[in-house]
Structure formats: C-alpha cells, structure tokens
Image (cartoon, rainbow, N blue to C red; front, side, top):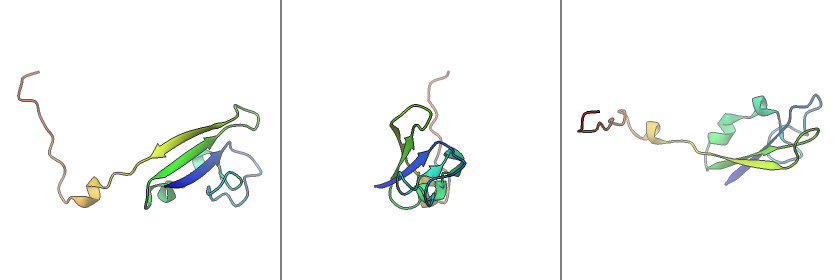
Length: 84
C-alpha cells in the first residue's frame, strides 16, 4: 500500500513537496496530488497536525473505483418492487 503525507500549509513548504514522506509532505490539502493517490495500488493519506495546531496524524484511506473503467455501460439501478 502506498503512503503519502500532507502537512499544514506553510510559506516555506516541506522538502521536495512530493508527499512521499513526512519530511517531503504536500504543503496543505490543496497541494495533494490526487492522481498520484489514485494510480495503481490503494493508498493512505496521512494528514499531519502541528506546527501551531493539533499534534499527531489522521490516516485517510483512499479507494478508487475501477467499475466505470471495467464496463462500457452503466450499472443498472435496482428499484424496489414495493411502492414507496
């Protein structure tokens, strides 16, 4: 499983800013590369707290659905046979 990191937005940024480690975390949620998150294997996004705020981490699991790519037609909607 891939793991990425995002830290609070900072004027200085964090290392290379590629999200691949705590030291090189994405600079704020607006900087998250959702394409990198959704390509290939499942990914974890570690949302990091502090500096100046709450310390610690919150882990977010990101799952991409391949259903739309696997079928040429939309999934049929299931309707209840009972009146609502």
